[in-house]
Amino acid sequence: MYHKLAIIILGLSFYCWGSQAQVIEPPKVKPMERPWPKIHTPNRKRPVPYAPVREADVIWAKRIWRVIDLREKQNLPLYYPLRPVRDRKSLASVLFEAVTTPQQENPYGSNYLTAYTDEDLAERYTTVDDVKRRLSFEYRDTYLDSLGNETTQEKVYELKAEDVVKYFIIEDWFFDKRRSQLDVRIHAICPVYYRFIMSNGEKQYLEDPSPTFWVYYPEARFWLVNNEAYNPKNDAEWRTYDDIFTKRRFASYIYKEENVYDRMISDYASGLDALLESERIKSEIQQFEQDLWEY
Image (cartoon, rainbow, N blue to C red; front, side, top):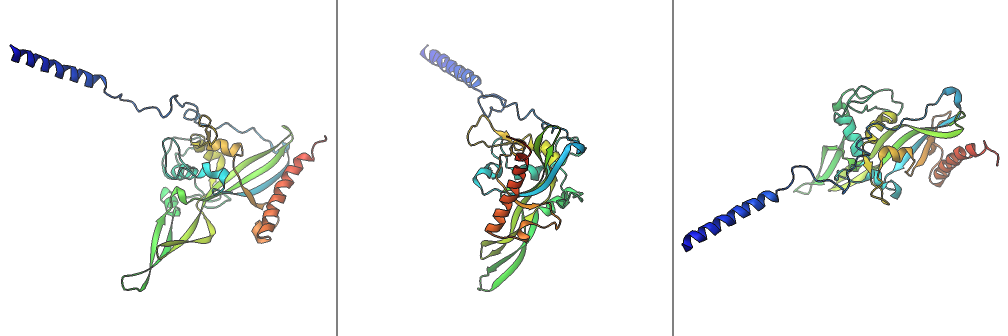
């Protein structure tokens, strides 16, 4: 009798254990990243359109070339994370993926972001392989072999998003008399990196920056608007990369303005003089708007 009772109790124990195992089975859906569902950025899909501008309403305009240095503190949200983290990617990762990976159809009829060879956007890369070859370069590796002899090899390095340390942007400043507003539109953007050579296991970077590819910014907005950047002051108010550029939440300096010689500031000024010239051009644009009004 006692043996039968023990068997019954043991059987009930296994039944209860099996029932509890079924109850605590994890859900089949992916856990949410936040306590609240994030719906604004994933559902935006398209950027906010610019206000229409007529040529007859533009009474003044100036084209400006800028450098966004990612080593400046204000620009760190454009540089990090070095690797995709949860729902965040760096700006370089977004652009690299956009020109090499098929995306959803966009109004321009292509599922890739168009990459151009030069700042004039006159010639584009026709295939993805052409773009990928542009995202790599050959470098010289010099080292001492086992016999102590100096050996040099030519190797190929494939660029990563973390190698992009600057951006060139071209923008148009203009005054729209219909809206009585000084406005700015970014025309094109280009990720920039520095080439290097290897000497005994140490990288030696070259002084001249190397552009990767240019993209037409109004087209790139369709990719930037769906990717968020970190906001160091509020995790509930992350802006998209399109918001950062549209709202001018970045630090930069001018390296060229439209001129009759088509020359850069570095062609006629250097050091502190180049910085002062950059500030002079910036102040000239701001002063133009101030001179239009009476106070």
